[in-house]
Image 1 (tube, rainbow, N blue to C red):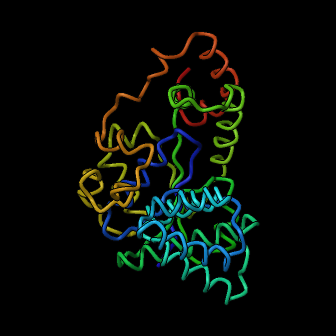
Image 2: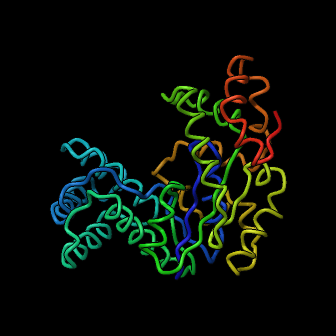
Image 3: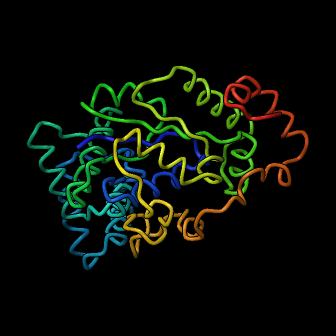
Length: 290
């Protein structure tokens, strides 16, 4: 199996793209799998066993119990692993195997990345998929190369004005300056082409989904599948019952272009001017008109 990563800044279409990929029979994606701070892995495995029993075998309730017991990040990770079809007992087995192999903690970025890889690979094994992976940051690219033997990265970018409009609509806490700086860092990372990377625009994914997804599949050396377009009716595990994702309602609407150029009606002139000035170089490089 080969590793596949979806990268892009927040509100750039990473979840939509990951869902489309997860709908392909040869691809298995784990969405947000990089964990936060976790207790020692053998201790967390015991907590998962207890939570599974006390929750009457409910993945969602198991995660909530871990939060109540003072392990909020472990609770979040448990729910996300279950969304990737790895329920608490299976996750506990993975953690115990990690501990046996000398991988007993999950504190460093490399350790968190390694655990996410193991969970996503377990999902792919269940689904008999050739590609496996999850969402990550574009700044993790060196880690991809160091910790995976064979991988491909798909980087998605979106008009920074729409990114900011989406941030505002979602009620995110970032300031416009923080969002613009983050977008600039993302755009800067796209200036150095890599043979193991495919770059796409959110706008192309929405307006020309068949061709955009076909190009991705060509890079992965697999056939494109209609299920990627009809992802809301597919095997994509983000729709697993009982494990609601914040983006699920929007995803169930299917592909539509209502979020393209939303900045024209939602941003005031001062915000537009600030973003266009701050992101001018990256917007020119990525061919976003100002």
